[in-house]
Length: 603
Image (cartoon, rainbow, N blue to C red; front, side, top):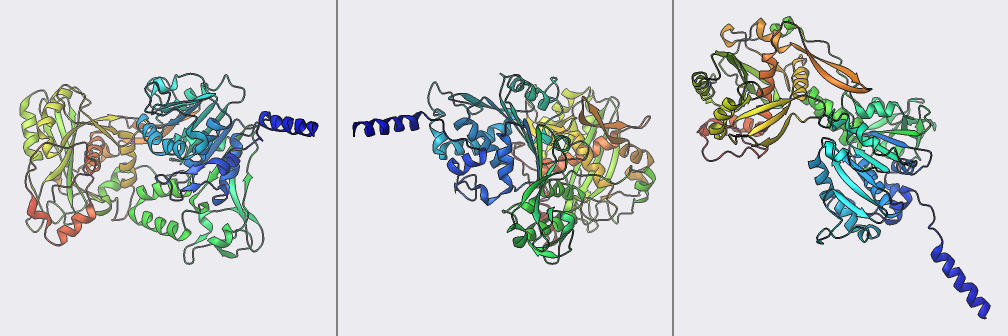
């Protein structure tokens, strides 16, 4: 009896001291992860079987033979949850120092509050391993959290300081196509972060993103340097495994046609089959996965088809976003270079100073050493645009006289055919030249008229319109513009050949300023892709001997529309009911440039 008790005791001790059974990331998630109600439509226990394509991606992360995992995907496929499960795994089960990198520090802070903190709170095995953020000597801050055996640091790819932190074993990089080309002056942020892992023999790097532009996409380049795996399902009729391809989707009945036997089957019939990942290449230690929205259990094929139709109807800019975020594919611009003669041929004779379809007017102003160049642009549904006037004021921007002329010009009213008037609702003035102070002094007292200073910043991954700042002597509102993003938008719109969303109209009237010189300037730059140390970089090359002010000015007028952010559909409805022109009164009160949605003066 005593011997039996002794054996039983040793068994209990052995069970306590025995190492836990080896778990993969997906097994850990299925056992421990809880989805939070504020960040998931399906709160409660995590189930990998809900989206079975996620299993192999997660398990590749803790495969000892795999060093790098690449996920090039659409939205709505659960890629952020995959990263959260990975974080939970390396906090609880295989503790390690980690970096979680996002495009900016602000996005990293939002992720920490909105996604990471709820997961830690609602997953019991994580809750006790990270101290309460409210404690005075807490190791749990918004961007740095310690736990037994490791820590996680959240950083923005635009922050050189964050990238020069201590060595880490795990690097998780989310939305890498939105990273800037360089972290300050330090170089490529992804390469800088990867160097932090070099001292660990068992390091892991996970790169995740929706793609952007063909041949300039970081995630596409990483994916093409991997196993290039696709999620494949067998045909319910012939059993042939194939990826879910948009080209095989049939709109009339929301089915997919088998690429081999040509039989059509519904979404349910395809997704009831057991899928698997099929690699197109071999790679010793780098697995790459591509996913599109067609595989998602959270988005029906009928919805995706409707999204496509709507995007196509709204024009190439919206279609580009759909290709990136629904198909998880890069956008390839097949149109050729802009031809000045072609642009001039599209000029037309307006029946009034402002065509009837215009709902909002904006203006852009470029400041040169001896002149101000201004364009007034009208905007309609789908951001269809009408050039109203391109005007040059000659004079010294260091003197008050030229600014008085500009003030009078921006304050004037413009006429429709029926005699109704419309004002300029927002204007952007370039402050990046030799007259920065003069621009600030002009804009500051006119912010109630939505006249703002802007400063251009080149490079990939920079939003067209950034956050407003007042960090200048005049305390003027200053918006940073991602000018490359803006130029790309203008180039795309100028290549639209048919009237409708995004199409650009120009008047033929000689006195309006849209002559050959204007169009040469509008088409003065070409987008090319160069490679620096193997990384793609978009550059805009100006044609020799051609002034590019018309392109810059159109960029500023376009930015003014984005800052204004009007509800064009509501404006159209008000115009049709005769309510739009009854409230053309000067705005009063302090400006509110931090607010993203600003109602047009037309209201």
